[in-house]
Structure formats: structure tokens, C-alpha cells
Length: 79
Image (cartoon, rainbow, N blue to C red; front, side):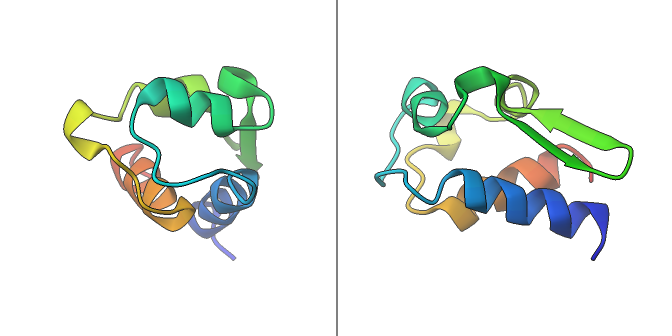
């Protein structure tokens, strides 16, 4: 599994208990197990929810599921 796929899977896993739709960045952080400190790591690639939040735009919301969140973050983070 590539680092990109691993990070994607970890984001989806971190949001497995989240209630969707998620309408704001604040709701997204609140849905993560450790808020902005939530980390996803694959090999030497590490991204925190705080870092991921920097690549999201207001127009990305609402998110309808965890896969959509992971797709946007992985694509924009350049993984």
C-alpha cells in the first residue's frame, strides 16, 4: 500500500464514528479522535488534522462521508 493509500485509509478510519454531513471545519475537527492533534502516518509521511485543515476550503463543505474528506485532503496535500 502506498503512503497516499495508507494516509487515506487512516483518515477514513479516524472518521468512522463521525456523524455526517459535516458542515464546517470546526465540526470536522470535533469529529476526529484527538481534534487538530489527530495524526496520520505512513512511512516518513505524517500529516496532522491541523495541517490537513490548511488545505480545505469553505466550498469543500459540507462533506457527506469520510471517504470524501480523505479524497480532498490526500489530493490537496500532494500525497
